[in-house]
Image (tube, rainbow, N blue to C red; front, side):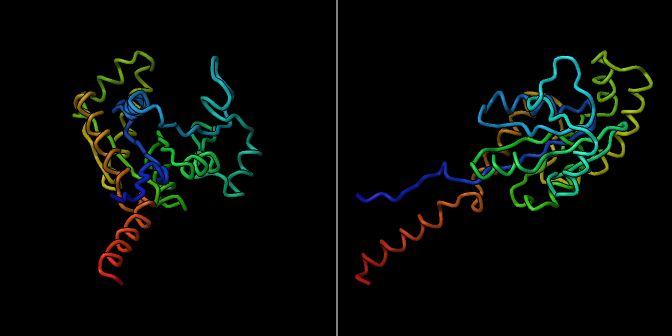
Length: 222
């Protein structure tokens, strides 16, 4: 029996945007997804801030100065960028484009503004966006305080910012409530599996269906 080529691995990569207010769990979910599927990679941001102890160039960030960063923005080399506490952060375009072209999926751990810029970029067709909500505002504050990393003033600032961030939930393709981490991770896996199987991410299907049509014509003597 003749078998058609079904090279289902030959697909374009997927960009996965994860956004949430601080403390809702986007970074934890990103790490869980990469532990589940080691083929996933993380989009490494560029920044103008100085490296902190233990940070490695190209692993945690691409460290650069303001002039070089500004030139990258002007040259269209950033998918998204923003200024945070007097430092600039952005997602370099070239590594992401190379990964997607090679069929590798890339995770972005970014806020709604960065997500909006990427969805509106030339890579928008390759993007799936997911917003993660806390089960309640009280639980969000409990998680922030449970970290033991921030002062009361910083936590209050993060809580105030969360209201604005949550207001953008409807801009995303999927919205999940992180009421229980294992359940939230399972739902993320389901989304990723389904998105990888979308028709427009399976370039092999055109040749496959063309082959089926050829079989019909041969069968009918055409």
